[in-house]
Each structure stands twice: as C-alpha cells, then as structure tokens.
Length: 247
Length: 54
Image (cartoon, rainbow over all chains, first blue to last red; front, top):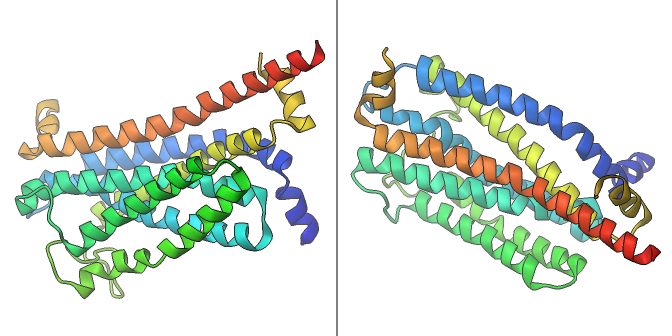
C-alpha cells in the first residue's frame, strides 16, 4: 500500500502517467460528447411544456453537477494536502480550480439563458442561483489566493483551508430548492423514487454528465502535470525531459 | 426534420445555440491553455539548461 502511494504519488511518475493517459480519456470524452449531443439535440423529443428550450438542460445540468463535484474533489485534495503534504494533491487541487470556475460560470450563464424564455427573467436572487454565484466567488477567491502567495507550497496549504471552509456552501446549493421554495425547480433525476423524466431525455443527459466528468479528468490531469513540471523545474527528470522535447 | 427547423429550435434558437456555443468555447479554451503552458514551460527549462552548460 505505501509502496503504491509512493510510486504513484511521485511527481515524475505522475507527470508521465498523465501524458500517457490523457489522450485516451480525452478520446473517450470526444466520443461521449458526439453521442450525447446528437441524442440530446436531434433524437430526443421536444418537451410538451418547454418546447425545444429544455435542450439547454443537456449542458446546464452537467455543468451545474460538475461545479459541485469539482469543488468536492478540490476539498478532498485539500485534506490530503493538509494531512500528508502530498505534492500531487497540491497540483491536482490547483488544477481543478479554473475548471470548477468554468463549469460554475457555464451553469450560471446557461441557466440564465434558460430562465429568460421560461421564467421571463435572466436573473433572480433565488436561493439556488445565489448560492451558485457564491460558489463562483469561492473558486475565484481560491485562484486569486494561489497567485497572491509567492511560495507554491504555502499557497497550496492556504488554498486547502479556503477550499475546506467553502464546503459548507455545497449542501446549501443542493438543498436550496427544498429549503426555500423559490423559482428554481426541484430535482428531477436524483429523486428517491423513479426520476420524473422520460428515458429519451434522461439517457442523453446522463451521457453528457459522464462526458463532462471524463472531460474534467482529462483536463485536470493535463493541468496538474503542468503544475508539477513548474514546481519541479529544477529537478533532474524535468531538465532531461526539457532537453528532449523543449526545443 | 429539415435543417432549417433544426436550427430554429422551435423558436428558442436565440437561447439554445448561445448556451451550446459558450459550452464549446469554454471546453476548448480549457483544453488548449494547459497544452500551450506545458510547451512554454518545457522551452523555458530547456533554455535554462543551455545557459547552465555554457
């Protein structure tokens, strides 16, 4: 077990692991996106109430799920950073933040574009919308903190604390539609009983959600290996690698 | 369904297509940015190596 962690947790090993696997996970992502988009935009029927506007769901809902999933991934890495001081976890945490911010921004804008024709407004200070906006500010705060602290390792530890404090916002986002009954609709897919959505809409939604997840894994691995490379720029393996490929 | 009908999105084209366009743009930017950064970092390290050898 400890041998395993030592091997996979070493920066050099991680760098090569990332280079080797990202093309494959990226390829899988492209495939899933093509299937999900075709199914969602062409095959799935129009909604009987919302017409074709509901198709925004196929990007909005996966983006919103990812905005919370990425935050939890950051918080878990944050624990590993604080307890074990693992460099790969630091890199992964820092790599996740811009992706989380991107997904959150995408969820907010697509939600607003969906809200205009359905609710009649681009924005309301509804509990769901407001807590999602706070999530965006948490990501941006994390990113700002990383660039404000000179020493990478100190920045990572400070960021880990920020990420952990911000976890309180995640259940607020999730339960906001139950705790405050406002404009945003409740859960459709993750209900205890059967989801209240036809299979022809549910399946493309799930495919898009998996595609967004594999996309996150791909790009987080890519970003994290660049973080590793920058942190280890003076090490022998990085310098040898740069001689081979950096010209 | 004709292409024109598909593009019209039942009258919601102005909301559906910008959503998908923005999603594509954001996914692409995030994909390209780390590749460029990695290439620049490797170049920078290689330059440092050459300077150290002189």
